Image 1 (cartoon, rainbow, N blue to C red):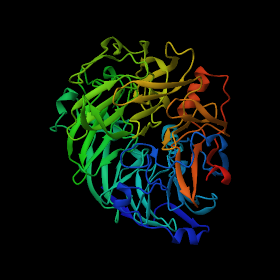
Image 2 (image 1 turned 180 degrees about the vertical axis):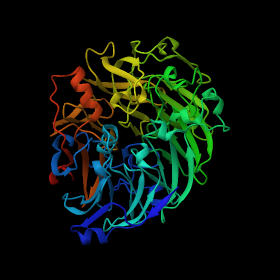
Image 3 (image 1 turned 30 degrees about the horizontal axis):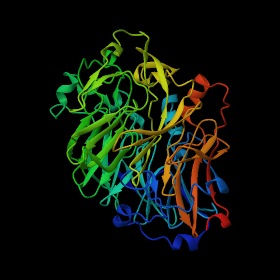
Image 4 (image 1 turned 60 degrees about the vertical axis):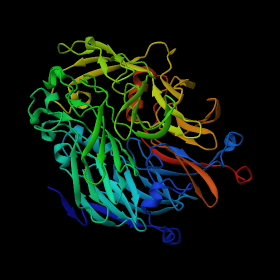
Amino acid sequence: MLGVSAMLAECSVAIAGDTVLKALKPVTDEMLQRPDPGDWLMRRGDYRAWGYSTLDQIRAGNVGALKLAWAWNMEPGYQEEAPLVHDGVIFLGNPQNVVQALDGRTGDLLWEYRRELPKIEGGYHNDLFDRARGTIALYADKVILASADAHVVALDARTGKVVWDTTVADYRRGYTFTGGPMVAKGKVIAGISGCTNPDTAGGCFIVALDANTGTQLWRTQTIAQPGSPGDESWNGLPLEKRNGGSVWTTGSYDPSLNLLFWGTGGPIPHTELVRGSGDGAVLHTDSTLALDADTGKVVWHHQFLPRDNWNLDHVFEQILVDINVGNRPRQALLAIGKPGIIWALDRRTGEFLWARETAHETVFESIDPETGKVTINKSLIPKQLEQNQVVCPSFYGGKLWMATAYNPASKTLFLPLNNLCMDYKAVEQKPLVGEDYGRSRMQFRHAPGNNGNIGRVDAVNLENRETLWTQQRRPYWSSSLLVTAGGIVFGGDTNRRIAAFDAGSGKVLWELPLNSQPGGFPMTYMAGGKQYVAIPAGLSLIGNRVVRSLTPEIPVPGRGSTLLVFALPDADSR
């Protein structure tokens, strides 16, 4: 049952900056569809999930002069943050569901909201709260937070005070928000995660709320329910044993089609040996769902990995691009799951266009180039508990939540990747115990043929599908990518290095060791006529596990999280 209340477990404090905040204009649907180049209104910049900025004050010729403009200490926790900017104000979601408004020129605090997360017995739940992303969106005069305790909260953008607070699910059953909301046509759309135990039987879901009131408008399950399309893919497994389909990240939206595109995670338990689903495809796990934005109805779906036995989610950003395929212009959707395969679909119909491998993987025997039908490597499907198998990639990717970036001028996609394999076992243990929550266990291995290098960035032209360049590094690649019209690609690794690459050649133009690992979602914005680049840094949950296992010579920084903001000296920014 949906609940709406005005004030629940919250505290908001206004600090200063009335002049800056009074100048804030409401964020309209038109702005979301055509953002001002100086703003950064969504996690990936716009509805298309490009991670691209048209700003070009910072270029190949002057990026080497970048200096720290200011820095802001964030809340402790794992770093997967996505700062947003509107009218020169940074809206920063922190770990632990703290939201702050900062002056984009100086980093001065304007207001903050601190959500009091409930205290729960049990390590897994506390770990989820510790991983709580500051998952926010901007709309009208509101900052919208999807919280770790499965609420959606609207804050006044000028004061941080709660406008409405809606209970979407019961956090005590394991439900949580991790991926952040999106606003489309006045609806707050968000996907729930944490569907890993009997209390969340039936899997996860995507929900739409009225942005003005918080009232629920529709809810769509990501796992096929009994009697619904795809039910047969579970081979008669009762609903109380169907789980997974988590929606870890934020989707995309095409206003011309009025379609939302969201990816889904794998089934839980990880292996069919333990979950009892036999050789069923277990829809709609590891899929892209195209939803009618008005009703939530699934218009089409495409499953990339049927019979997932290895926790290889296909839940990440859905990139909307217009490219030529066979000399024909197509409105395409790109999805890249943990195996690192780029899938191109027609975003109107879901028709398969093409697929291309990047990272080393062994779970697909083949992909039909005409139909996209996959043949799974059945030899890697566990036949008994505790049987060790070498599987590539590891269930931390290949490709993970670290987001790609797309340059529309060159039709180039920049991919953050990691060369990892795993020793993998199906285990029969209680769920929700660390790495065994999906009843499997793994240890990292180096992928073959990379000279011990783990992290890499690939630049792939989407029309001829050729790799233009590859940058490989020994450390794990820990951040999303940002590309700009100035011809720069920004991102960083677990060795604390933030780097700027030449988008055309891959040459490193600027590199700097930070206080901690670059993470989250870098972005760029304008304030006071100057272009800034904002880099979240802090503890990488998965990166640190890789560091300890495969690169122990790399020091692991402390847990402190920081937003570091860089700009050119005034003489170089003209």
